[in-house]
Image (cartoon, rainbow, N blue to C red; front, side, top):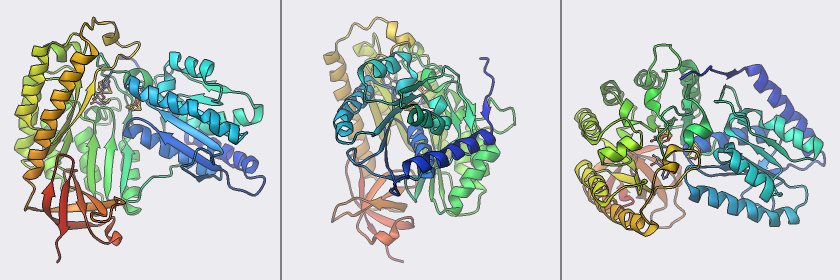
Length: 472
Ligand code: SAH
Ligand code: SF4
Ligand code: F3S
């Protein structure tokens, strides 16, 4: 695949920061701090992008609000992975007509994967006049410049470039939490699974340089973060575009060498590229969580082939066995699509069989959603929504039963967990995660947030574990 790596120079990012200062003068002219709201749909990559938007907005002098009626600037960071995600976005953008009527001068911007698709950008342009500014993921680095264009011209700005994507280091960030952090190690995807829109919206695979990733990980550890999730659409192909001799397993080892008490997680791993070296590295690196999100999508070999996943069920199962041989305590999760075009009852049964065999700790299940422009969108799809829903419900029953059984096995045991936040409930007021990422509810003082503690598991259900703090 021919793709020339396009790096945005740090000077260009500094120019954007200068533009932020200029916008600040305009927005803060009356001495008041403007309020901004960034609403995020979609995956963790999008969450990470929203942290960059908030970083720029902070430089513009903004404080943040959750109230659409109070916000001076609203940014809707969108997802295109399924129709449902797009419908939610459009519904919410439509409702901003009310807030803008209440607050003339409110700036509404829509960015992210949905508007990287030309037909959706056109739709926003034609049908949502409330929107002032539109830009795709490849132009996030120059959001200040685009916003200034809108402020100075008072015209709608639509900027959707058809590039394969860029790498931009040094964008300021305002992170969401203090305990858990996202660390994007690469962007884009080269896999073109036949159902998936991501390669079209996020462009080609681009890895950040290992020294940049490690420097950011070190900053996070120094700032007190305890749980770092490395992000990429397929982290297993990290580094292939760089020719620097560092693969994903090497990168984990480099981050593991950073002094400090913290956990390394990552997502997502494509089964076709998971290696024995990766599993061995996970087992050997004491800071790497024994947690693997390994989307299988289907248990049927014909469906896997037409999905263009490049593995069959036997290869997948052997990967799982290999991973478990290195990490017997591995927590394994997956994604599954039900109702891919033409999927028969028999083919669906193979997915059930695979799930019963693998026994996932948790499964993320989706009904196939047709995405315009993908190969699967033109495949015959004779089954009805009701047929698909039946399969979906049945798969979820199996998934929920297995999760509950797996959680039950924790009961009576003591586990080290990281306390990561409050639940808002009285009885179990704190939430925490095991090394493998399972959710544990606890009762305790909120000063424990950010600490690793030992917990005895006293109860469980499909969704969570319940525990008591062990003293000493
Ligand atoms: N890069 C990741 C997944 C990104 S999208 C990977 O390859 O594993 C997250 C999940 O959404 C996918 O794993 C898939 O299960 C689901 N998904 C993607 N496109 C979909 C579609 N058109 N319809 C339904 N589910 C879809
Ligand atoms: Fe989509 Fe496949 Fe890429 Fe994942 S690996 S983002 S499912 S094309
Ligand atoms: Fe959605 Fe784009 Fe992520 S389509 S899942 S926000 S990469």
